[in-house]
Length: 119
Image (tube, rainbow, N blue to C red; front, side):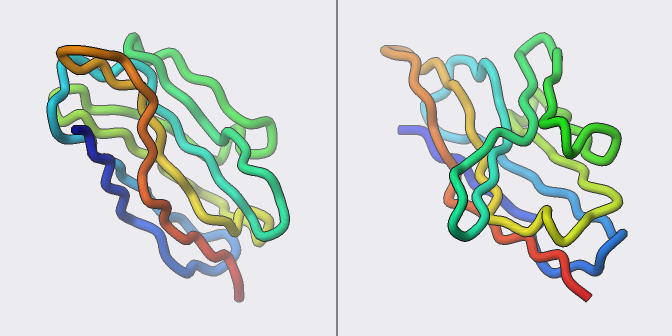
């Protein structure tokens, strides 16, 4: 059993910053790729940023230069630093991780955290 627990969402004014965290716990042998997705009302879920176990990164074009993904492998935790936030960044943000347990490798999701950018 693997759980992903997110924290750090909230309400922020345009131009502000937030830092999201997501910690994986449970029967983990190894955490491979980790990422952040978001889903705004009426829209499909989209990949915001991802980071491999060797810390290669990939970003959605609209967040490049504003968001930074990082990870702490000793804590099985991934972070998303979000700067210069815009109203269009408003969404529920979900953490994703590909986790290898002792028996299988599967994708796991966090419960989601709301990010609202508004004045």
